[in-house]
Image 1 (cartoon, rainbow, N blue to C red):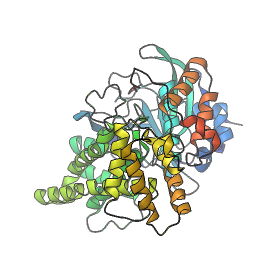
Image 2: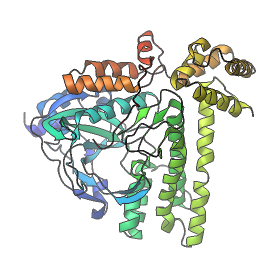
Image 3: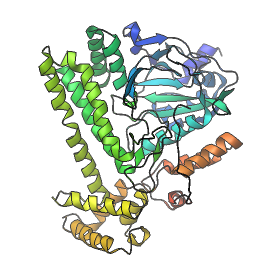
Length: 491
């Protein structure tokens, strides 16, 4: 069997619509080959949904593609150019260690990006080596797949391969490449790049491409670019509310990390909150708390305002009118987010309908959780299963009063108790990717070459609303530590 025949049988069905955009949007180049690639983990269900043959992906030729050593038929590898505000400061960026192989057309006719991350230097690498280490690539695999199982829009992870080469960070670490799947890699930063260094015609081309890529069957009305802005705002309002509802902290909400499709993208210093505190920060470089848990909705609004600025030339010929259209659209974000968050919090408390006092009921609970340093996930889990004694709040007068008010609230509904308890079970996960569990899995994988800890973790995370007995051990809290948990970016 020839190599070409083996690749075809893998199921690659690639198109390259992004490569047909203006040449200034990207640089065409192949990944840099690696010494001895080895498959570490493959996402078989995702592969099947993409129309790929998992068995073929495990073959020597299949792994060669996942490592960037071999280019599948139909691929036109490229590195995308983009810019972005990083911690509020605008800069030129781009895929410094990633290559877009192309767009896989799935059996259902969907179009998704297939990107290799850690696949070598590009013109946008700046001072970077274009590579990635094994730990962070496995972290992205674990967290992105956990987010998918939680029902949160996200990029997906198809595979991780080691390269047989070391990367130098603070020490020598095993190199790795992640295969990332995304609805697209169009970002706010993509539009910022074209707005800054392209022409108005380039900007319109990019906007038209985005509309065609993500909203091909929707009537966009008289002003398609206003529709694009409004739709991106709606999707981000949903996404950020879902982050908040499970205690997820992205860690680096720069404009280049805001995907226009409304997917969570880039899992560098991300983590999940244990003790409820809106000021929680895990990223080692976020020393001022810009991207703290409680700031995420406001930062999303700020990022969206930067997106709106890029669209001004397309929104209206009159600059003042364009600004007004953009401002009116952006002003809707806070309310859209709040409505999504409030609906989600009602569901977490088993509330189907709306009453004016609901928000104060929710805020009072969160305030107590912060005061008594209650675990965010487990507090809602205890309420779900009628075990208030399992919360850090139990025994306080304030909680006893709150619990009485909450019970009266849910009992005023027409829905029976079984229904609102089922709503809570569907809204409160049995477990999240606890940071100490993720670290234990990564340490076993990187230091001992033991991937069984990660595999067991992925298995229990795959059904977070299953509330099965075997998940109970994974919901336990870490041992108390005098050292705060820290995550790192760009590794």
